[in-house]
Amino acid sequence: MNSAAVKQQPLKLCVICEQEKQEGIHVYNSFMCNDCEREIVKTNTDSPRYLFYLQQMKKINLPTVNR
Image (tube, rainbow, N blue to C red):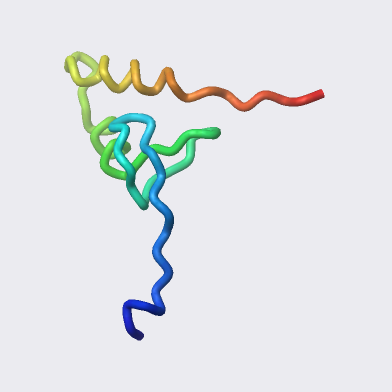
């Protein structure tokens, strides 16, 4: 199979690192890249980096129900 036949996924903006990436997970209406997901999971809660992740995750909004 040649490379032209392989369809590329569109780039999405990661809510944590704010970089465009292809692969990751969707959390409600936001996207988190695989790299950030791995870093969050392995970061100790007493690390200064953990506070950064918490701040960035506050950008994730819960979906609302329209009535």
